[in-house]
Length: 143
Image (cartoon, rainbow, N blue to C red; front, side, top):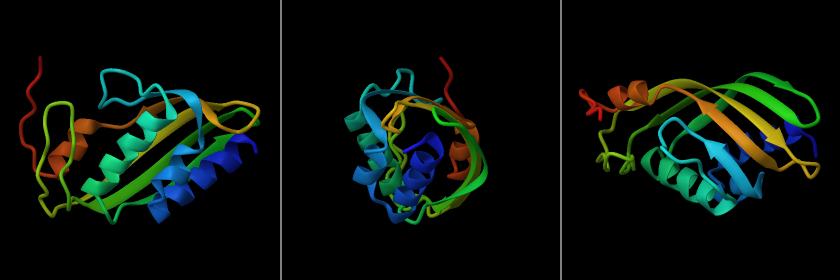
């Protein structure tokens, strides 16, 4: 499986809310850099835990691919995400109770995959402050 096929399957799994299938698109010892996390996610289990927490917070979440560029071992994607904050949102600064607010956010992903098509390194690009503002967090504590 190449990078494009892996990416498209991962997004399909997200939209089915099949977190295990999503996590299987990552190599066992993957590295995922996400602006919300101070440390990289360092393995497939961490990726599954992260997406499970996110989907619990937004159980009706939907991801749409806007742009996708790929070759055999790399993929760059721009996505649109939308959902309703109906569950506890886990953040490094504490949990945010459900607000019932709808969020829409665009983000980008750059991934490298191995010969089996699994993500070995991923960089996610989005604005966490925008997402938090949409769920009603008015002030961010810096420091």
